[in-house]
Length: 329
Ligand code: TYM
Image 1 (cartoon, rainbow, N blue to C red):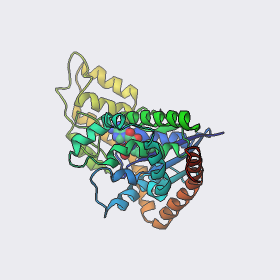
Image 2: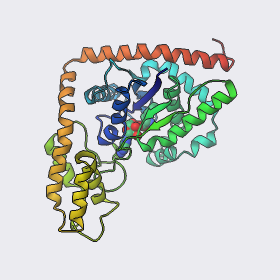
Image 3: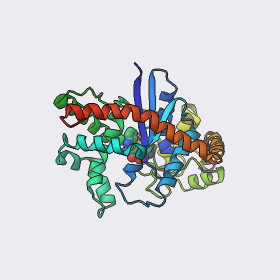
Image 4: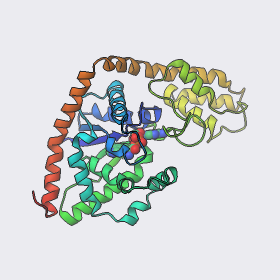
């Protein structure tokens, strides 16, 4: 039997290089691997766990869905859903999961603590339940493989714990989901500190950026004199070299490293070449996206079909859980 894969992204607007390299590249690799059955989703219910705008939420969902299709996720090969089309089943399962996890375990999660710091006035029950909703996204399809960035590891650990507990206490046969890692599992901010993120202004390059925008964004990446005794392993220069490796290859990175301890790097040239290499990869994605924007009916149909295909599997899992937990069928 094929192994199942599930991955999702929050509808926070257009995707950036972190989403692309850390998650989408893994999703694409698994979609094209005949050993796997792939299901992907845009997780709009997760979006309501932090402050959001209800009037534009579905526009953001569409943005991510279009980016999914534009990067090459293929509804012929993968079921691609909007999470709230299966709200009845997924939120239901997440509630059942909440009965095997303690409040103490959920409160101590580093991702929860980060969000509490970010939005101290929005520490809701939904936020505490966020990882259980994610566990439900995955386990509702009994998916064992999850292509996500390394930042999602604490959430996957929760999904594994839920699976173990449901298996032990109720005789379910959930797999313990593991992360499918890519080379870009941690994409740094272009500003030299922390990871690339939607919530940090100026940290990201988006999939929709044109060449001028990419050049302008990279201009702000901090650098140094361009030479020294050892190549920096953290900060702006280290991050730039990581982008060089991801978009121009390891050999190019080694050239720059040699230049750093030798005649020096000219960052103006480095940034220009890097911007061009990034844009060369984004340009075909942008072209596909423009075509899809002109065909909203196709996108609507794909959303509906994705939901139908996924619902059949999800219904069977929820029915099984209800029966094993002693609830009415
Ligand atoms: P989200 O929406 O924050 O991010 C979507 C995906 O992009 C990855 N990512 C990164 N990878 C590498 N470097 C970065 N700088 C970077 N920034 C983001 C994330 O790791 C993620 O893979 N909780 C999830 C959404 C989710 C989900 C799921 C994922 C809900 N249910 C089920 C997988 C399976 C999240 O907030 O991702």
